[in-house]
Amino acid sequence: MLKILNIILVTVLFVSCNKATIDLRGFEPSENSNSNNSGNTGNNSALLGKWKLDKVTEEGKTEEPEEDSDGTEIFIEFFSNGKVRKTFIFMDEDNKPMEPMIGEGTYKLSGDKKTLTIDDEDGEEVVEITSLTSTSLIYRSWVSISVVGGDSNGYWTSMHYVRV
Image (cartoon, rainbow, N blue to C red; front, side):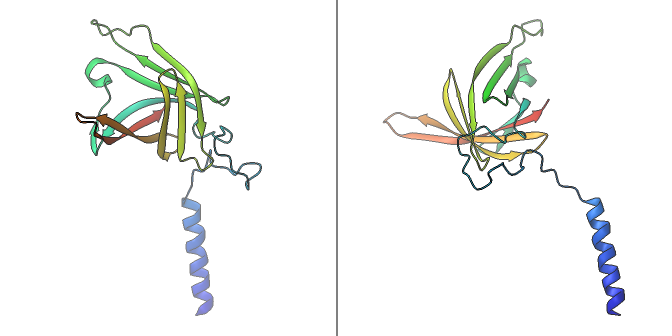
């Protein structure tokens, strides 16, 4: 009886393992896995490449990006040398693409891959990566609003990108 149970368990294990896959690209251990890579751009292969803004979520309310209303497309591209490029493509009155607006800067990905710092002509932006897979990048940041009387308020904004 125990032999039959073992055979069944081993069979179930092999069948289930054969059907399951896990995508760990970009999350390989670094050469020196005991070191703290905070602030380095090394081992960032999951982040590298070109991403297109798919949707924006503000305080739980999901909105499609501006491209649905006026044709604007927003891209962000990460390079292995620590450079980042943001591209905005606006449409004219005839719905034809205008000359792209391109902003360039640098980025740093924390060792735990949870914090991304982008430094460009708009200043430094620190965001929290909430999801990074081979096909999607989601990060969130706090948008601060100053109100009359010196008080400040704000809300969380999540940017949802897809790889292109």
